[in-house]
Image (cartoon, rainbow, N blue to C red; front, side, top):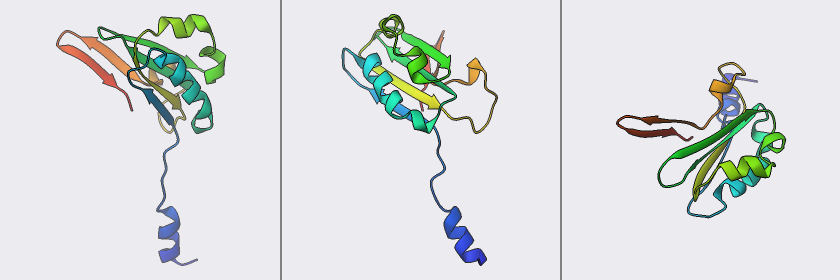
Length: 117
């Protein structure tokens, strides 16, 4: 194989993680959990969902499969809000630790920040 062909073979998408979001729906967290379950093949290391209830961000992040944690009504009920984003992690960098599970968010003195992929 010559270098020209090798360059074309390397020219492809390289994303691994799965991202799913819902806007303005009363069951945003449950729908996001279903979406992440469908995208589980994109990453099986960890999953997280962040919702926004119009006032504050609410978050659940866990190591393991989506169905291990987000199939429990008690977990989904904690994620109130009509807007949500979820993420399946396939680590390409960083260790398998809780702090690396996305989406990341922070309530800061100057406002709110959400690193929602």
